[in-house]
Image (cartoon, rainbow, N blue to C red; front, side, top):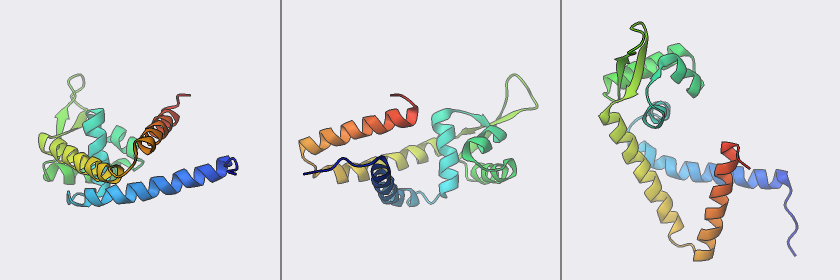
Length: 145
């Protein structure tokens, strides 16, 4: 007979599974030839829109000088571009270039394909259970009940 899993046991299982899954799909990110830090910042810009360097640094948990160096390198690589703020000429925003957007979305497609390959052998029942679990995880992270 199965026992109820404690909150701590479940947290440990979800943590381990998430780490293993992320490590598996991270292999696809290495194919881009772009560092994880740059991909992360680029993702914020692609999915969240243009940001100031300070705002981007805050979201990424790095200092503004560190983000300035990342943005300079990404600009040199053609992944992002600097655009003047229409309301304040002193402010410069960073946005993903078309090249950066394409690179990021192609990487996402590779990660999704790698996950799909893992999901392929699952039974219909397992897929439904995983779908329910993904919905629950997404709601938890978003702060919904």
